[in-house]
Image 1 (cartoon, helix red, strand yellow):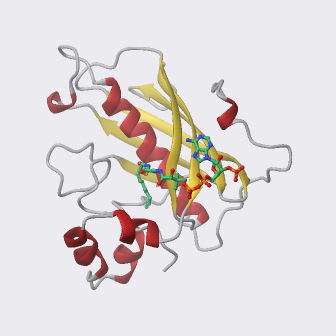
Image 2 (cartoon, protein in one colour):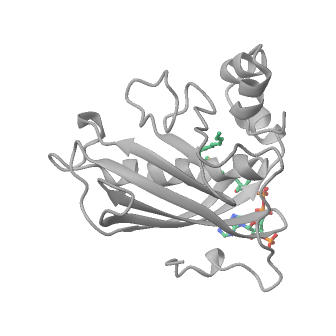
Length: 194
Ligand SMILES: CCCCCCCCCCCC(=O)SCCNC(=O)CCNC(=O)[C@H](O)C(C)(C)COP(=O)(O)OP(=O)(O)OC[C@H]1O[C@@H](n2cnc3c(N)ncnc32)[C@H](O)[C@@H]1OP(=O)(O)O
């Protein structure tokens, strides 16, 4: 773990993460958890369209190709977009735990610039769980799963109840997601156990 923040250091009594019995099999694509998600949704034309795949244990791999609409400096990915790719990949880990959780802290190292057209290969894993706190780490590599490291992140996700989204989300999107006849998609929009 590269984070230096005390908030990202698991307490001494933290536990190893436990993969949920119904987690998708290693190698299985997760698909979008919500069509409107900027990170993974298919209905967001300028979104990242990040595709995540379950790994062994509580780990995920994901790919994201940098497009012209993701630029910051000319021809290079915006740092915030790269942080989004890390956040999305780390957030997907919670589906393997079947826990609803939101990002509390995300600490990012930008190691190399990432040109437009690059496919970023991300790998993330949960390192520890302490009560509602889920500690995780991720790496993004250029061009291949063993390519040069471009970005790294350590994160703390906090488990929440589904009320978190119902209480804070805009009503029209909440209602539409709740009324989705597809039970699995409805559950995954909020990362709830189906
Ligand atoms: C198929 C794919 C599916 C899934 C794919 C899903 C991908 C989703 C996209 C990625 C995820 C996101 O971007 S989620 C969106 C971005 N995040 C958010 O909007 C969260 C906004 N923040 C909040 O709502 C709140 O601050 C919470 C829920 C995070 C925490 O509030 P709370 O519930 O009142 O809890 P609180 O008591 O404050 O904190 C609980 C414990 O966590 C610690 N804690 C809380 N925040 C922090 C922090 N920033 N840094 C360090 N530690 C913290 C506290 O010290 C405490 O420790 P102790 O005293 O217990 O030791």
